[in-house]
Structure formats: C-alpha cells, structure tokens
Length: 162
Image (cartoon, rainbow, N blue to C red; front, side, top):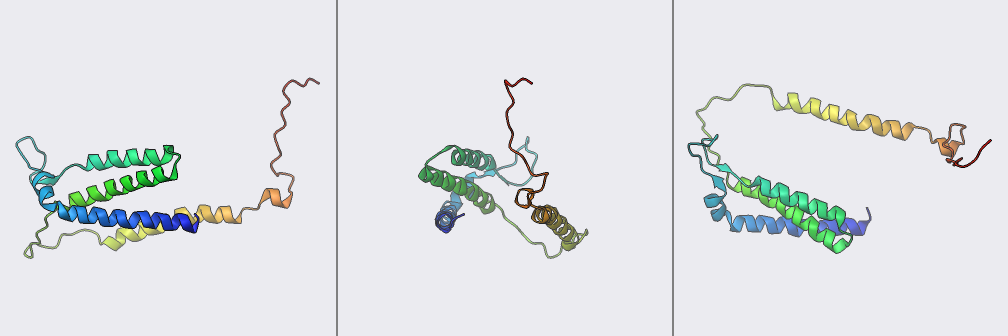
C-alpha cells in the first residue's frame, strides 16, 4: 500500500470514529429510551437488551459490497466511511445501553484463569501463521534457479495431427 493510500485511510478513519463517538454521545438519551428491547411475556431475556445489531450487519455488508463493485475511488471512500460508521455506530449503540452494577458481596466465580486459555490460542495462532510463511520464504524459486522442474509455458496442440 502506498503511503498516500495509508494516509488517506487514516484521514477517513479518524473523522469517522470521532463522528460516530460524538453522535452516539449526543443521542444517548434517545438510545436508552428506544434501543433497548423491554422484556415481556414472550421474551427470552429478563433484563432490557440492546437491539438493532442487524442494521449494522446489513449496512456494513452493503458498504463492503459497494467497495468491491464501485470503480471510482471517491465512491469507494464514501462506501468505506458508511461501513465504518455503521459498524462503530452500532457498537456504541449497544454499549450505550449497557448498565453494569458490581456486587461486592458476590463471591468470585470459579473457573480457569484467562491466561490458561489465551496463551494456547496465541501460540496456536502464531504457529498457524509462522509455519506457512516460513515454508514459502524457504522454498526455492524454481524459475530463478533454472531447474528442470521449472514451470513450462503451455503450448496448444489443438488441430495438429501426427
């Protein structure tokens, strides 16, 4: 990626993140009132639950599709902004509706430590990336070495009879 493209990406991401944060803060009272599904007799939840994540999925999918289909860099930029605002905005919509109360009298829950789970995941992920990358880097370049197993151009023999 060229440095101008990287700079343009940051120039798009920073205002999008700031805009979504400011707008989320500004409409927070409205979100608390209408963005929570209040439990009723048919609900599977007992506490108010954030709703509307489907909107973010649809908007982000549409924006991603537009970035792949549109030819104009300006339209791709706008589609990327829409995608970023949709995902970040809906994340903050859900987070704005969450209320947490810490009960100091509750016992500490049992179970495995976080490190005992994250360390193996990190090691397996690192190996899953390192092994194929190392194999590709150490593989000999058959074309550059002139080996007999170097790929040969395909010659069409259609229409030739012997």
